[in-house]
Length: 105
Image 1 (cartoon, helix red, strand yellow):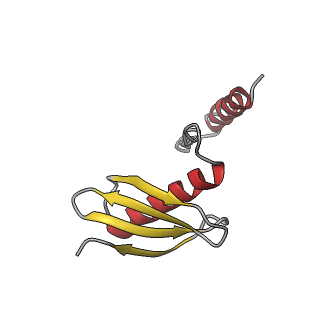
Image 2 (cartoon, one colour):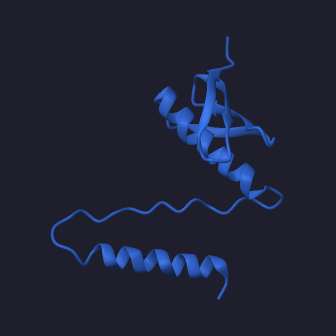
């Protein structure tokens, strides 16, 4: 069984177990898509961290990656945010981000 199938089977089992309790609300598990071909796992993780934090900082969930430049010290990610323009973000290997700022004048 491939890694993806094992992961999906495990996620399905967790979802099934979440329904075994009392009247608690069922947990929703969001599974990020696998990185596109040619994109490293590090870059994909940096992209997701910046998308998450730029969306939170701007209050706008309409975010998409324009470009990413991987570096050991921190990956620079440019994010297009709805109608507000392009934002910059630096993502680190521990999942944190910094330097979120608008590049639109």
